[in-house]
Length: 603
Image (cartoon, rainbow, N blue to C red; front, side, top):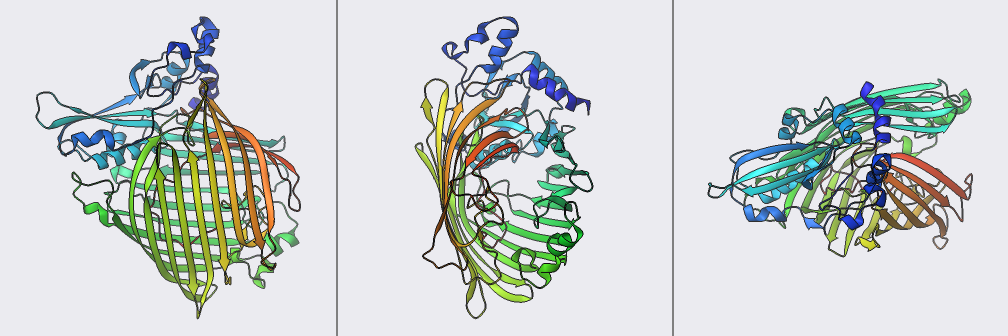
């Protein structure tokens, strides 16, 4: 625990800089960095570094080594004083020395367990590209690179060098809402250097009964090199979906195996959770009538990747692959609010069923930066997937077959990036009912240079959702990831919804104590046709605002965001202005086309 209390000291002392592929040229150095003493240390923490090069497909540098024999595999973990993009750069200061002293380095065997190749294998460019991407996705690694070099004196033989750079794995989150209400989280993302995670949670709320809440969870990652992950935990102040307040006791456990490579054979998961509310805020009569519930969820699925049997060394990036998955789920309420015993609400419906899906897909990754991160490399998928889903479901005793179609495609060029999405699904009972349609386009522009210290990228998303012949499905919400999630959760129910979101982000290359900053402006619009309202009647809702995000890529803190909103047409109970301070935000691009069999979800 003592290491955690050094965390704030480490922030104040100056975190190691997050550098990129090129050295900073002298003319780009902040003037204070040239000073001696305390001013010089402060200046070095503020100075900027040049961003990475243009986007590149990860597999490209490995193509010329295809089929050669791997004679040697060398793993080189780098300390906080080293730059993974130029290992000749060494930064020695109080912050890096303190970080190296307090941090538990990832064990060498842990990195070995996360490699898809070994000595004696032949170079398979796509497999190694998948491996670099997989390493970069690990929460306890800031970044990873795999370099291949010819070996002198050996014909058709190579040496593979794996560079890894840890993040400072002690993290936490403190949310202070008022002097009487606060939440705290303390976590270790690389427990004992083994890559596992341990978290503790706490709540203090003087208006709640009981006033204090707590929780913990632990995640074991890639158990003994099997790529199996196991997570279990509990929390006594989970948000209740009946009221939104922190009054649900929740226990959960999950065992899963990811599709870590296009050559992986199997993936799947087994999940169990149990949740029960306690009366923390309401009078006894209102609690029992509208908010009390207990529920259980069991979800099992497994899938097989038919593309795993391809000839790895000669495989081609654009090859179409096949994936089949099967899933069974069971959601049951042991206790309902009294009102909903006689009034149907889709949120409290017992649901179970089995689904089977077939997916045709191809996927590669493009390495770039300054999308959701603040300079580190980010991998964006490029490819497509088309899925057919069928199954048998039971909702409140009504048994119906389910059919669904979905398509996703991405196109990444040096000028822009587009993601396209189309999903249609519904149930059949003498006719098609509870039919859901979701269409979407997501786009971001090329990274533009604005002067010496600034970069700009613009983001646009457009979503259209529609429900037809509704019977048991929940309505479309204005408060949704495909709507405007900052409106009240129970404010608007709709049958069609069209949402346009615009955002422009300005990344500043300077760093202060290792933190980069990115101001942004946004404008979001949603047009809906409400339930039980004539089709011609459309309501529009708008949110306009600005804010700033900041992050230190050397820590597991996540992104900190300050955001202000202006609502020209607020709904009942809302004000025209609102400000939010959010911590531990995990901006991350959804980078896989392979998922469990699923119904079309449009909220």
